[in-house]
Amino acid sequence: MTDNDKQWYFNTVKGKAELGPISPIEQRMGPYKTKEDAEHAWDIVVDRNAKWEEQDRQWNGDGYHR
Image 1 (spheres, rainbow, N blue to C red):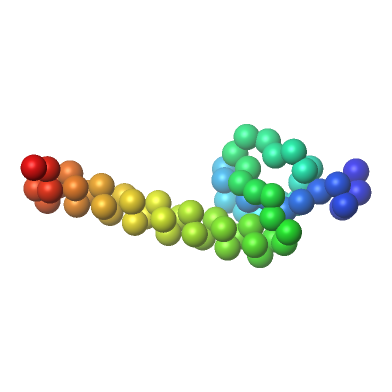
Image 2: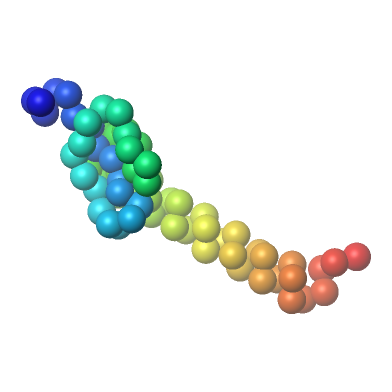
């Protein structure tokens, strides 16, 4: 397999970007053109998930249920 047959993915289990085959396996996010793109995309996911968790805490704990 050549580098032309591979693309960057973010391995959500290992927590790092990897160069891999075009067909992603489970627990891979991508493909991306560069390692930096894969890492940036993961940063966005982590930030989004943290915001959602905070909203869930507020929703469930601060009396927002009506």
